[in-house]
Image (cartoon, rainbow, N blue to C red; front, side, top):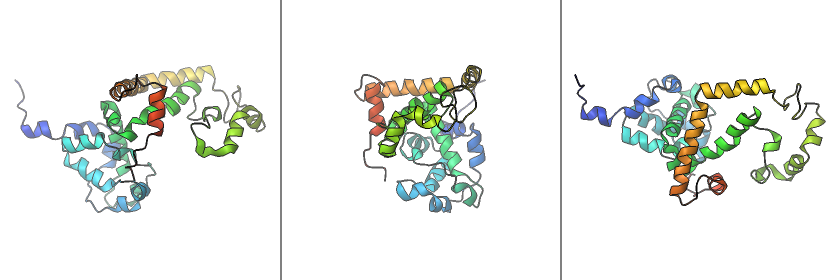
Length: 242
């Protein structure tokens, strides 16, 4: 027997239910009373057009159109995940957890490509993500290119160009086998890491970011999600975020 689905069910709750599959959402949303304390203590709210109180309020409505607008917006990418909101909420909510759930769902559904800040997720995947896959580290000195990080200044440029000489002085086996903070990760550990990434769905997740970005790049007039597109999303700023 077919289940009768009401109009309300088709218009409300789809995205909310998908969000509630995320444990962070279950932990982060209890009973928001819209007091605004989270916004008052939020560092991002001071600098960006960003209001965690409004975001939590929108999610609580379970309105699919409103939540989809959030998933496609720049707004959910402004959170710095500092967790200042977590200990302040009088009702035990954690807006940052809700933001994390929204981000994950946006990436999963391909909605991240609709916004300027969202499209930068490909840049994160191809920098930090690739660093983890290839080296086992989020960051390695050799991977922080001064041309991509001019804010590091001329001293870093010199260190970057003389990294082996500099870091080997600390005896940390820089890029070599053995103990040390920036040692070369052994092959067995890297194989285990790659196995974890596959089993947990990270490989599939990365592939989806690439696929959605490829489609968006072509739509925007690029030949694909190539280096030109990468540099565009890495540096683009339409000036509307603050």
